[in-house]
Each structure stands twice: as structure tokens, then as C-alpha cells.
Length: 153
Image (cartoon, rainbow, N blue to C red; front, side, top):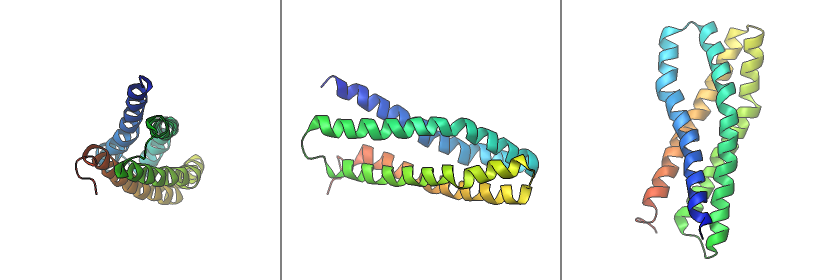
């Protein structure tokens, strides 16, 4: 049972990296970049920033899923409803991220590389919308995690 605190630490750390990163990018970096940079600079910045952030998201996804499932197995009893809700929302978030990573993100990079700024902007807009959805889902998952035991059905 000494493994559970370590798994929970890794789980929470990974959530902080992923959801915190989305919060920073969406609510802090994006508005400033939009207000101060021209399209070429902004799109180049985003291609670079996402290229640095996404490997961390993949690591976070692996840690969140692995540690969460491991805790459920170690506990060995039927998991509370809010754990299942966290798992469900988390898997939806992971699927959205995988789509974002394998579809609009490569388009963004490809269009930035050939200086096709309108198409790069369209790809970034798709990414922005998916990150907004995932940020909302991430905040909802944090609420489920912290309040679920107190307001269970």
C-alpha cells in the first residue's frame, strides 16, 4: 500500500502539467500573442511552443492513465462512481489530444514551414478550440476528483 501515495503523486503531478499547461497557454499566452505579434510571428511561436509542450502532454497522459488504473487495481474493491467519471472524462480528453496531435498540429507545422499563413491560422484555430474543450474537461475532472467523494450519487 506504500505504492499508492507515489502513484497518486505522479497522477496529480501529471494533471498539473497537462491542465496547468493548457490554462497558461489558453488564458495567458494566447491573448498576449494575439495582441502583440503579427500572424507570421504568432503562428511560428505556437508551432514552437506546442512542439515543446506536446511531449510533456504525452508523458502526462501515460502517467495519468497508468497511475489511475494502477490505483484502481491495487485498491481491489469496486471503485467509487467519481473514479469512473474521472476515468471516462480523462479518456475523452486523451482522445481529443490524440486527434489534435495527429491532425491539426501536423498541419500547423507543415503550413508554418511553407509560410502558408492562412492555412496555418486555420489549423491553429482548430487546436485552440480543442484545447478550450480539453481545458474545460480538465477543470471538470479536477472538480470531480476533489468533490466527488463528498457529493457522490
